[in-house]
Length: 420
Image (cartoon, rainbow, N blue to C red; front, side, top):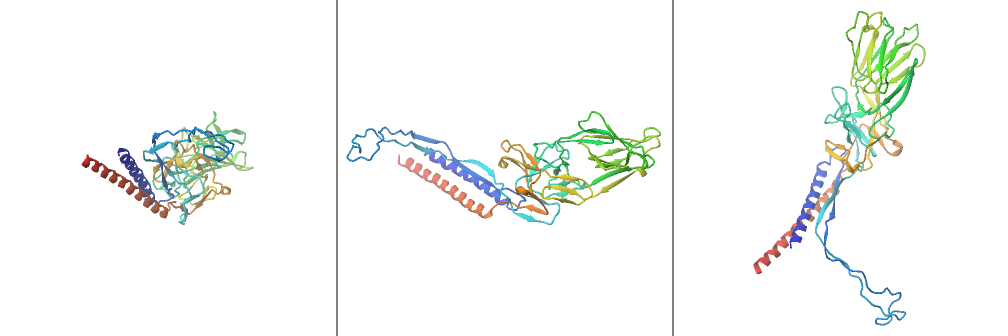
């Protein structure tokens, strides 16, 4: 009797969990990019009443002709095998896994909305320095007051300055540059950054301070490099453009020098020679940049121009290349996992890597492999409402049936008590 009560009680608990999962799926039927969950059951340890036994009789080749006589005339001996006798002890929820099948694509017309077709997740972070990563399929982004693309809860959409080629957990970039005899190596690590649509480009051109020097130290370099702005009629550079950040004029140090600085992150230096091809230096995160005036006087407003694009429009190609009009180009990394069902839900349509998800593998979306990013679309929930309603009936019926077992056992116990 006790076994029956415990088994039925465990069955009611399991079907209650199934109903909880179904209820959550139905509640999120209209949630952007929601992935439905499914509860799977397994039986619990069975109690063995008998172990069974192997057959002791001799295996005969032919059918018997007479009683106890084989086709060859040899008498059979021994008994046959006996199966084990076991009584199950109930049911349990074996797993609740996420179904990452594709949701329907819904056109919104909002250029801030992005939808993923195929595998992969957007990478978002609660801070612009990307100290921690979260992953989401929901591309309902908006632009905040500082020009950053953010999720509804304020997490920044992260992008790389270089095409992502399938590295794990970081985005190393190695390259060399050589400008006017200045050579060195630049190494970028963990170069994901918040995507910002407000770009500030500061251009220094030849003027009264044609001898302006810009010194910079890139990550991985032990010495600083110097670019000198030459005169239009001489050698050197006719203009130098700093991409990113905002120019802040500093206080001159001494009677003939100035020390303007940069507020924000400088991502590129574009050096345009008096004669020759324009060359670009990629600046690693954490690089330091200083300015040195000339002996002819302090840097004045006539020596540089500041171009700012506010709330710039952008386009996203199917491979995740995000181009800001008049600004920087970003590359949206797609985070892939060997086992997406192993991700841990964190609410707000966010996931984090779990013990059984595997490490994230980042790469560009590949339209040739059925993986694309669509601008002006959102991925809908993959909840099948008809299926959920059918499963709800199954769960309710299972719950009721187990409760009937408890009622029946209770009646039997009452009968025994009243008649002993």
